[in-house]
Image 1 (cartoon, helix red, strand yellow):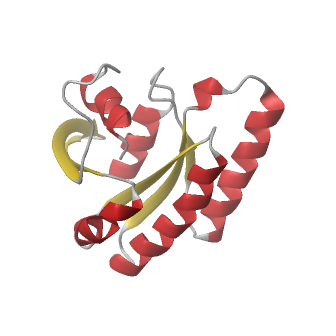
Image 2 (cartoon, rainbow, N blue to C red; image 1 turned 90 degrees about the vertical axis):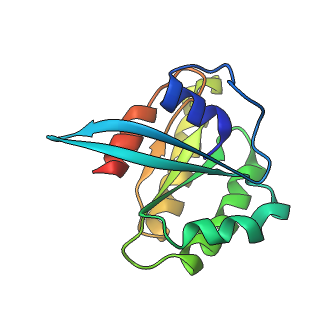
Length: 151
């Protein structure tokens, strides 16, 4: 997960508590899901190509994987397809996956957001996974996305 996304979800703050991820980072967040308390082990795997071989080993034992892309960057959206392929190759069929379009707070108009949403939803549907829109800056959609994944 992108670093600022984790800062928002785990600490309800945008300001980093430590430096951005190089390689892999790990944190635990406890949440209530229904009548149960669940401890989520969250692994922040750097999204850069040079770390792909390192991060593959973390997918193998994952119960769930969120694949985030920056909705303001076409290249980020194009790159996420490669990450979907890598993750699918490294997990079993019981692993829950979801596609997340982050930075929705940066949209200036509804037509741009609508077209990005359609593209994200289409890609998620193609791979049989849900699609969420979030903003690490405002916190929009993050709790819903994470709780739904935990369920």
